[in-house]
Image: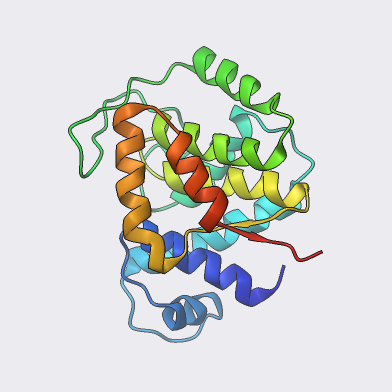
Length: 202
């Protein structure tokens, strides 16, 4: 993967999480260059770089809960407690009064198995994103894990890269909240299919 595309993906992930890091700062952090950036932002960028490296090194790994836990462990290192562990306490979502159910390992594994059966690989990637983001199975980092999983499916099938365009970010956040509240992924999947996949030119 081109270095610039990796920087771009990490920068857009940071903006989805509400971090104010810029593209040049993201680039500087990844290059180990001096920059006046908050510690949280530096850790976010470094962890996402490591998560991407892990993703690309393990494309042959089965799409399963253990993989999601590894993604979360990497993205959460030094940023939040219990990284890589299924949460056992309630969490709240900013922008809505809706609260996700407590995660149950058996239910998660069954749902992942159902998604894995989807024949349309692009739809499978987007379904993974939606389920992981909404299930909130970890204390933090759920959207990061959701993006990584979507990217794994898209990359291993030579479809492209999943990333939310900066100019569509606020619209996407609104749609994500609506999806959390309703559980209906039809509209957000159509949106992501249209705007959030940088497809490989054939």
